Length: 192
Image 1 (cartoon, rainbow, N blue to C red):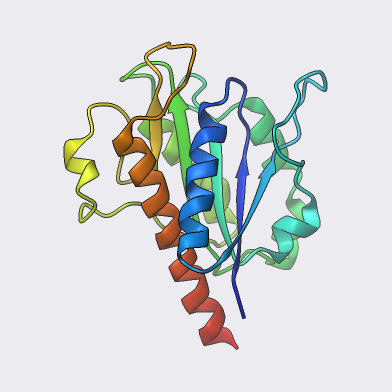
Image 2: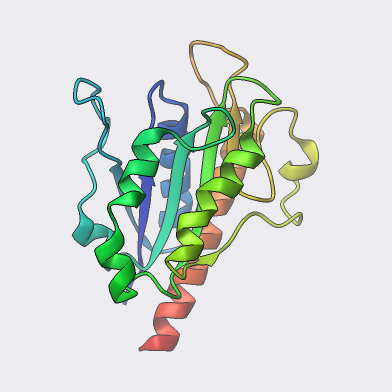
């Protein structure tokens, strides 16, 4: 049975959405299903590129990639509000032992990517999820001049309007999707 990986994100200017798309490619290359969904915005005038996530989709996923832009070294308020409303899922332990990872984008090299990834991991740990990142066996972690961390894929826009991912950022996001999908598939097969 194929694992379903929920690629869940919030994006205002498109960079986090671009990372989500590359992660989904990696998920599919590993033979799993990528379900790309957006976190509902607090500002209802902000349009989403993908469909909004439902609580059922979160409960039913076999693995999770969670993305948010950097806001002062933390996830955006929209993402925090989303997790604050998952108490019923937490009480039932519906995410326990499911692989998960995080990804983000900032406007500058020292904009807080790693701090944001670490803070984004906290609700996942509280839900009992199994965190995964990117191992240094990925050559792009040694070559990147912009985004990319062992904590998860990142993008550094340099305040450019186009938010185009570097080659290294793209490859790391795809590798992350593959890794998350492979781990999710293995765990799902073991449970069955």
